[in-house]
Structure formats: C-alpha cells, structure tokens
Image 1 (cartoon, rainbow, N blue to C red):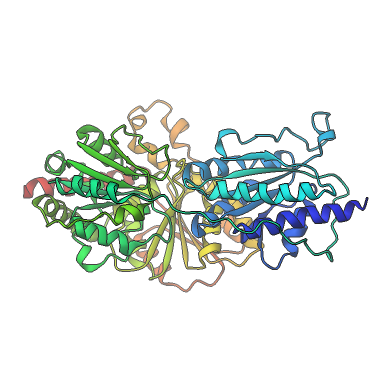
Image 2 (image 1 turned 90 degrees about the horizontal axis):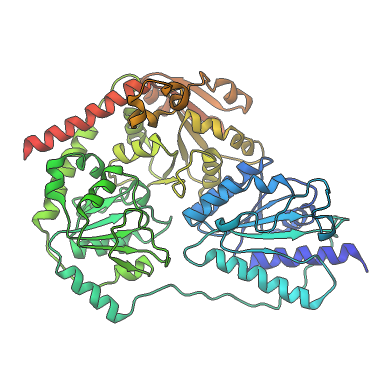
Length: 570
C-alpha cells in the first residue's frame, strides 16, 4: 500500500469537505503531528490560512475571526498540551455561541497510554464545552471510510452552525510518515449540500404575541449582545410599531447608525438612570421583550430582579434559554427576525416619554462630562467622540466594557462594539481583537486594561506573520481597577495584595519589541492630540496612565450628578 497516497487522499478529502461546509479560514499553530493537514490547508487556494505559534492566542484569534464573520473557522494544532491551550477560548466560544471547528492532531491508537512523547488523552478533552466531539479513524484505502469522513465532517460543521452555534472537536490520529503528495488532486465528493432553515413562528403564535403586546401599557425592549450583521432596519421597524423604549446594550450595536425618528426610543444611559430610586419607581415595566443575552449593566439586572415584570419574554433560539435572573415568563424559541414580523401598531405612551426624557438628560450630562486627571471615563468618552465613521471597537471585560456602557452615546456613525462576554474573562482579548480585525478589515481599536493586556501579550506575535490595522489603548491603572468598586475595597487588610495586584509594569519596551507606534499619555488633552496623529505602523499602542482611586471618585461624582438632576427635576 502507498502510505503517502492514502494519507494525502485522507487529508485532502477532509480539507475539501470543510470547504464545502462553508469554512473559509483556518488558524494554524505549527507542530509535527498536524503536518499533513497543515500542508493541505496551506496548499489550498480556497482556504485563507493564519499563523500563530502560541496555541492559546491562536484559539482566541480564531474566535475573533468567527465572531466577526459569523462563519465557522478551523483551528488546527499538534498533539499534547498544544491542544490543552485551546481550552479557554473554546469555553468562551461555547458560552458566546461562536462556531469554532477545532482539529487536534493525535498519536495513532498504538501510541496512546504507553508513555509516547507528546501524547495525552485527547478524547473528549473539552468535555461539555463543545457541542460535538469525535475521534476520527486513521487514514486507510477504503471507499466506506471516505464516505464516512465526508458525512461526519459535514455533520460536525452542521452541529457547530446550528443555533445556538458553538465549537466542535475533531480529534485526528495520524500515523507516520507525515508527508503528503502536493501534486495529488482530491477525489470528487459524494456529498452534495447542507440545507438548513431558521426557527420560525407560526401565524397563530404571531397573533398570540400581537394580542399580548397590545394589552401592554408599559412595554420595554431590552437588546443585549446581537450578532454582527443582524437586520437593524427590521429591528427598528419593530420598535417603531410598538413605540416601546429600547434599552440598548453597547454590544447590541443599536446605539450606532440610529435612525433619526428612533432616537427617542434608543435608551443608552439606563445604567446611570437606574441608580436613581426615584426614576426606578417611574420606570417599572409590565412587559419586557429581551433579544440576546442579559446586558452588561448590573443596575439593570438588580432592577429587573427586584420588580419582576408580569411578562418577560426572552427571544432565544436555544431551548436552554438564558435567564440568570430567574425572571423569564415566556420563552420565544425562534429567530429574532420572526418576532420582528409580529403585527401591531401602538402609540407613544407617557411611559416611553419618561424613558426618553430621562435618557436625554443623562446624554446631555455625559456629553459635557470633562472628568479629571487620572479618570478613565473621560478617556473612553473622548475615544468614542473621536472615532472615525466605519470603525470597530473591541472592549476588554471588567471596567472597559462598563465604561463603554456608560460613555458610549448614541450616534449616526457606523461604530461596531465587540467583546468576549460569553464568560466575561480578561484573557485572550488581544488575540480576539486581531482576529476581528482580520475578518472585518476596518480601522480597529482595542480598549483594554493593563492586567488583561499582560494576560495576552503573546497575542502580538500574530502581527509578525500578517498585515494588521489595530490601535491598542491600554488603560494602565497598575492593577485590577474593577475591584475598587466592589465590597472588597472597603476592607483594607490585604486588598492591594489580593485584588489591586499592582505590577508596576509599563509597556513601552513591549511596543518596541514588536515595532509598534507607541505613546505614553497622562491627560485627556494628550490623548486627543495622539488620536489626531497619523497611524504610521500596523500596530499602535497608546498607553494611558490613570489612577484607581481618582477613577472611582470621578465615576461616583458623575453618577451622583445624574441622580441629583433626575430627582431634582422630578
């Protein structure tokens, strides 16, 4: 038997099946055992390949590609702990519903469990954090195996793309020798096509919802994180018909490109408004419709849990609908688009005008906010004020996403905000940002804290292999800024040691190592001046030095100003 021919046919069939299933990108981390697949991917003129030598960063890069494109993205590594390093990003992909196609090369069966080098137990190694996992057979000269491989790879990608989308795992044993024949062409596929329909509502169900909505006097729409490329026009047509206020999480991307007539419905500052007990008493809804996940805002979560609306409808294509607050009364298992089609027409109410008036007040206060030296909020506000039309912002977790929620006002500009909120982790954010930029090819800005940046400094390696266009804004408060807002901050004993965790590190030398355009910033005026400068290198790092105590003081003064104004106007 010609072993090279058999192996070549095996990996070419797998590559062609992935392409047929809709894969267009593969992220590869070099390694010996994955050699045949890496060669097959690189040799394909239909597959765009990306290199990242750090598997942990590679997985987050692939996550960013898939998040931004909505397509399945392949992730390939060698055997052993290389595969272990994928786990954090796979976990994020599972909870964020991102379609990653994880391929781990493995030793053949006779080298498992016998002390062979670079061999670990890779079967079901990602546990419940993947939707599908299989140990594929070794390559052999068998027509039956060819048929199985085509259909099983298609099954796997279909599972990844079936909503709720998520990662799948194919473990691929490969026996030496590992070289393939580059001149050999793939065999014709015997599998034709995957046709998949959306989950829809029947006419009877739509009429039932229309009747429910028509009885509502105080209706509220909550928009959490929504997928890139969703139909904004259809959403706003739905909101227009209901005339209900829409609480727009920054990751809904409904605060940007807001139609002029929908500006009163688009509520961007609910986080600050709901800190007021007086406003809360006026804002209690009787019916809520939520699209996407629960928003970032903690005051909103506390408000909903406290007042528990009579009707809370969660639009979620998964039977495992998201309800961390225990308030959902109706699960609409359908696509959002099906709910947008629910008929009905309502008039503006006093309730919706109350929300619109309060949000206008808060927006005015936010736009005139000047902050103080050491304050991060004014930096975030200034960033959004200065962003060019057609920009993407990737936000780190912890304080950055909360400042985005607070200081990102609604705008006519095309600004897209993304973040890893499946598990709200601070790891892998740099790599995710590079992946998003690679997919969207737009001016991209990463807003990140110093500890989160340290978690993923290796993410910068990808810039040595690929053309990029990323500006990284590091809010360096020398530690974990979010803990200053939590109860731990009130206990002096061991706070800095356990939660503040100052490192005393700055990043000018990291910037130099990766040949970035670097600037150290201490004031908002310096930040404005730097943002106005021409970007001269693929990666630009703007390190903004802030103060945790000053930041807390400034934020609390901002919120107190809004609360006082609301309650004074009551």
